[in-house]
Image 1 (cartoon, protein in one colour):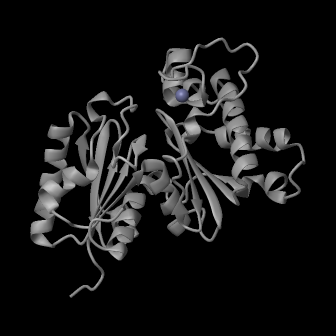
Image 2 (cartoon, rainbow, N blue to C red):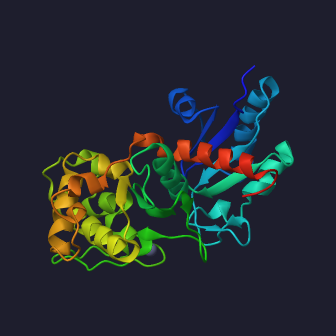
Length: 303
Ligand SMILES: [Zn+2]
């Protein structure tokens, strides 16, 4: 008999839902996940919940955690009506999961908040009072974790939609449907692809795209550092996988801060301050696992 409860984890993205079960974060990371394409809520959730129900029939799950795309309107308990994923506007995780699992404890949060919690518990931000996780992928998002708790506030942080000074010579209009040339509009994976008319993975490490990209990301990181004073900044997401990009961002952050913050983290030790995720590409699904564990501790039907 295994005393550690089995819980389910869903990393809910705009293109796919990554589903896993496990008793420990390592089990969640190391067991091949079940992947369902994100289409309509009805079709996607039927497939996701069928899979968890089959696992549940073998060994009952004690809780579920969801690391979801956003924005999420926590007051309304729903995906915000401003999400670009139109079919999912107003979608309610709690309601959808309750149709099959009743009052099974459920924890849900944004994918970036969840990843931030996972990095704080088991990854690169362990032991930090204040840490920040930023993901640069198709979109840009981020979370602030204070003593293990992701901050929400009005809704939750939306780092991707901050404004950064446009770089000289860059006349790209930007891709954000709400703001045009916000950070996400200028520096997300989608922005890279539309500006250069090729996906980022097809651009070699010396392409001018990365000089521009590192400038925008460094400005964003400096804003984050000046506002939240984190003890570590974790930069994840597919775009950060580009060879040499994080080194360029570190260099530009250090240059922009210009010695103003009297800490080695912003000068000689910047390579240990601006880091890639300790959990690699698993921060999201492991974050969902962390939310499930937290919901289990809190009891039925709590966030
Ligand atoms: Zn925007």
